[in-house]
Image (cartoon, rainbow, N blue to C red; front, side, top):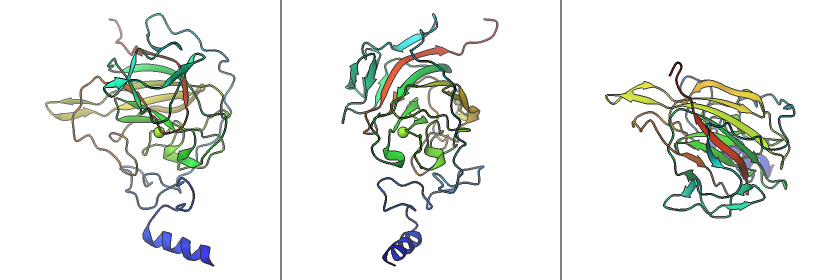
Length: 265
Ligand code: MG
């Protein structure tokens, strides 16, 4: 009885449907996503189909010869944290989020690109929903491709691993078990303005462990928690790649980036 009264209070207040849990698995008081039939972080949005990825790799493959190496397993010389040195731990060929060290960004700036990285969520499962193995590839510090431990982890679909956070759930859930190395290949084209007018939205293609999650899907604007960003403020065509510190000891390795380039040039 107590429980049902609590549930009713939560429903009336329009709060999270799982307020009692550590981390909500959805929200019912968020705005509708433009052009879609779902709210931001809609708990009713269907979870993507689970796909067991094939064997993609057991060791990091070398980067292509024309790639810019962002992390080769040895140091964080290509990264910073705001105006400070990047404070993440580096050991055994990977970097790991250190407690309270903050998100990190590349020192270099990039325009339309192909990015490869590998990540591992903590082997020891702690937390639930968004509190479990959370990080993110936040392109230009604005457009997030979510990184989460989505192996048997219920959360809102537009927040699971590979989601265009708060906007599109991925086409599939190709997550490996906690602790396993996983790969992202991300192709990104930035938003563009001419004379202050938006002429192209940012779009992304994401391949996770060899499985397509998005194909040239457009961002509605910058990614936000519980709301949808808009393209109301032009930004430069180049920006840095951010990796999110979300208080989980996430690991990354083998990070490289290439410019998309142009045909016949
Ligand atoms: Mg995140």
